Image 1: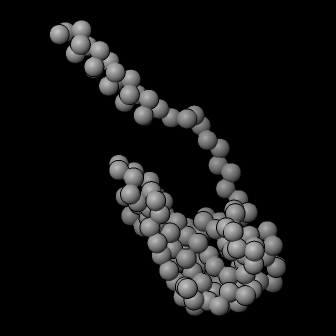
Image 2: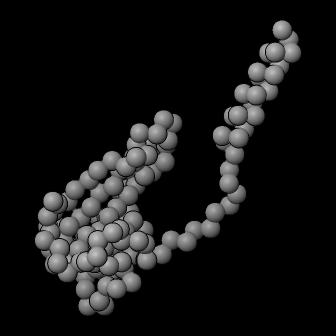
Image 3: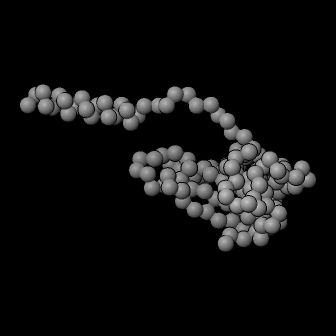
Length: 135
């Protein structure tokens, strides 16, 4: 009986330690060139013309700062990510918000989580054919 309880406790302890283990230090490689998705008309921040208002926007900027720089969007939209449904996930990527700018493209923000909502630019999608509305 005692051996069985010891084995069960040891098994649970190993499981908890494995689940909580960190994968080491991660380097922050945040840049202005995040993938834009599958749309052929979409372009990442690499291909934004220098005279476009989107050229002023950088990945990691707060959404209020973006609105101060380039103005209010034509339309906005938001959706939950898959992480919103993961039990005990307390990170900051449970919701995405998009700003649609007619003739410019979209700016995608992330940053809603357990600690509150602190949206920051996640992706800049330059698309001169953008109609400016969430479809």
